[in-house]
Length: 222
Image (cartoon, rainbow, N blue to C red; front, side):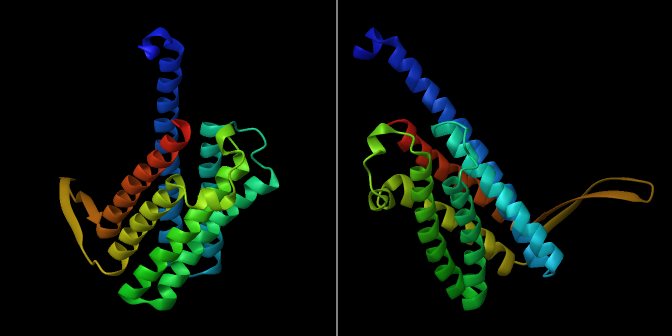
């Protein structure tokens, strides 16, 4: 009854849910495009130029993903503050550490160790990002340790690490592809091809979307 008597409360709740859903979709899409593009570049060609291009794509994607979080929870203003740039740099570094650990350990063990490392680093990045934007009054007195143990940080970090593991596993251990001819005109044939890592990228996007939804829902709907 209290909600009916105060229609503004219902309106604010609906608005927060809409903002959270839109931000989660945007953040997941930006992160997937950036991470998968970087991943394909560095895996298929290990040259200095591709490494620099991949790093640039990854950092821009991290900055945009951090910006989406800032817009959803506060505002876009002062996005280029040093402490907020640090959150984007930590996010970029987390993916580089993930791939380096996976390749250094190698095999299935590398997948597991890299997934654990990524989950830990992403949890820290989410906590750092939350404190960099300082969006909610009820979090103003929270310490960084409180943020690290909050489900709004470690659950999304774990989910994204699982999605990244799926992407890496499909690229490393699955040599599968599906190709079919759609139509042909004289000597020209148009093919439709799906490779395993593309399914891994789709799985990564879905898991990332779930992670961002969980994260923003707990923040925007206290």
